Amino acid sequence: MKSMMGLINLEHENFVFNELTYFRNHASIPIAGRYRLIDFALSNMVNSDIQEVAIFAKSKYRSLLDHLGTGENWDLDRRNGGLYILPPDWNDPTDVSRGDLRFFHNNRDYFNRGKSDYVLVSGSQFIANTDYKDAFQLHINRGADVTLVSTMMEDLQEEHTPYFRIQADDLGWVQNITNERHNPLLFTGTYIINKSLLMKLVDECIAYHQDNFFVHGIQERLSQLKVQTYRHKGYGVFINSIESYYRHNMELLNEDNYQDLFYKPHFVRTKISNYPPVKYLGQSKVKKSILANGCSVEGVVEGSVLFRGVKVNKGANIRNSIIMQRCTIDEDVHLENVILDKDVHVTKGQRIIGSKDKPYVVAKRQVIESK
Image (cartoon, rainbow, N blue to C red):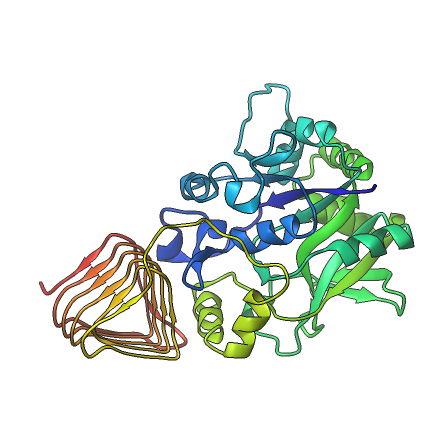
């Protein structure tokens, strides 16, 4: 039976998240109350019957290692296959490779030992709940060298600007990969490629001192390859900035979006924590919000996302905000359009207001108090 192995390539994900990435990489950013961005790519692979997944982790990956552990929460703690986290390891003095080609070169053993003949490559910035079995079957049926997963974005936003656009014919064969901003058919960063072709193209790119496998190995060789596209349907968004992160968390307060992302036959998996249920105390009032286990609320929470273990004390008022794990909000605090990273303590009477276009962000482990 033909099968795929997985690769989550974080090498080129150099997006700007300021305070949220002081201590972690992009893929480790928390989202939707209990998940991390990488959970979606990893869950989609497992839900596509992929049993071995590697992650190219370039920098700030301590948080990533802590979150993923042995991979048991994704059923990847296996004797054969499983989860491989591959940080930089440049010990070959003769190595002339650069960029993500250096990851491919130095981790060639992962691909050589894998039993699958196909590789599903993904990033972590496209957030969706899907499996790629249909895309894989299309790849095989069409005899494609590469199959690109695309998505139609009718409402183009600033966050879509960095992504490639796909031009394809009526049968889905890719004619061009461009940066044409008005084309709504975006490349999600996910593609299927024959493993033998992958390794061949890696060697060719290194020989010419190139540094980006997709750009130099696929885009620039488009006329030489049979490249198909498979269109993702359903909820899917790109998160690559503070603004897009805030907006898409707020969009998940819409029941239809939340159901489309999380209530499908295959669930999004994440690290399990043994927090108790949410406690609603005293005069608490909660409206149109996501609250994770372990929260304790005695104030007002409206239109907000609260992660595990958040404590909201009496008289506090939280609106349109994202409050990450184990934050403490003291009495009579007012927060609006705010993002608090983990373990922030906002002391009594503080008032912090951002805007929906530019939310106010506080880095983790800060104490907000009067001077």
